[in-house]
Amino acid sequence: MQTLYTVETSQPTIPVDKALVLLENHFEQSRQLFTYLVYFLTEVARYAETDSVKRASKHLPTEQDLQVNTKISGNTVLWQILEDTSFKAAIDDTRIRQVEDVEMIKKIYQQLTASAEYQSYINLASRDKKDEKDILTFIFSTLMLPNEDFISHIEEFFIHWDDDADMMNQMILNFLQKPTNYNFQDIISKEKREFGLGLLRTSIEKKDFCLELIKPKLKNWDAERIAMLDMILMRMGVCELLYFETIPTKVSINEYIDLAKEYSTPQSGQFVNGILDNIHKEKEQAGQLKKVDYKKQ
Image (cartoon, rainbow, N blue to C red; front, side):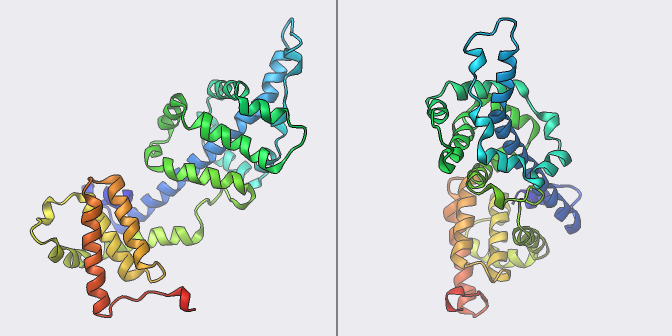
């Protein structure tokens, strides 16, 4: 959607091949953002060691300075991440060390150590897998995301944060449940990447045909006065209905209703729903919809 909007608003018009490169760049920016969020999280957990060394190195360390609990630095999930070869490679091939804010890491670590959740964690003698995951989830969901200074820091270096925030939140939470299932070199699966590129290409190449289907359904609406995002979403929806046989019709329509509500006007969800549903019924009655029904296989 974002890439197609860029294509539609650019002068001169962006050709298909360059639009596909633009989308690939968006994929890469999302990969870098995901990598940095994970990296920042691991650095907060690892700061316990740094804090312990600094406090023990004081000229006159107190007994408390000499007894800093570093249990979280040995968190088993943390070390699954740190020892992941794809994570190490992603750190090397992205710019994340250039944007690292050590002072921010320190502040969030200090908030962590002051929390009841942290005290409960370090007082546990065992290393239960759930507890190891939960404390990292707590850092991310409670200390990082709600922190306005942290979000400002992210927005400074990752311009697509507003658009990617919800997706990143879900991805990180899923990742912390099964960190070994992720490849930091390619966080978007081959199937999803091919689908995204295919949908973009189809939406551009089939623009005129899609508009021929959409415009008669607008009734008293002037196509030129309809919000550009609504037209883009309807084009994408029509393309999914007609050219992507593995995606159920209901899934496609519901997805574009949600996108319209999120990114366009308050009335856009209902508007997009009406147009796509109308086209769906028309094509289905004409026997021109080909969908794979997995329930029958």
